[in-house]
Amino acid sequence: QVQLVESGGGLVQAGGSLRLSCVASGRSGSMFSQKVMAWYRQAPGNPREFVAIITGGGNTDYGDSVKGRFTVSRDNTKNTVYLQMTSLKPEDSAVYYCADRGPGGSWGQGTQVTVSS
Image (tube, rainbow, N blue to C red; front, side):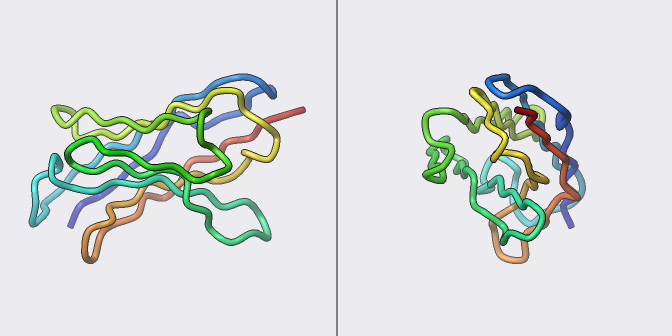
């Protein structure tokens, strides 16, 4: 099974930027380059929210609240997906999760992002 490990979270002021990384490792039925990978986030007391998704071919889609501010990308040579976050707002504060959206796909443990006003 694939393990996903996120990193890059932290504390940033409103208007700032962060880049999250998600590294995949372990055995999988498909190559990383074929995987559809996504980012989600969850703030305390709120349901998990879709943030961004990227297909193996590089097609992307975003949640309405992050469109124009966040960019998802991938480096298949490094088995890594990135989430570049700009113009951050306090309401972006959450634990951010990386997920393999294939059948039975894995989820990472999450990385905390805190945006101060």
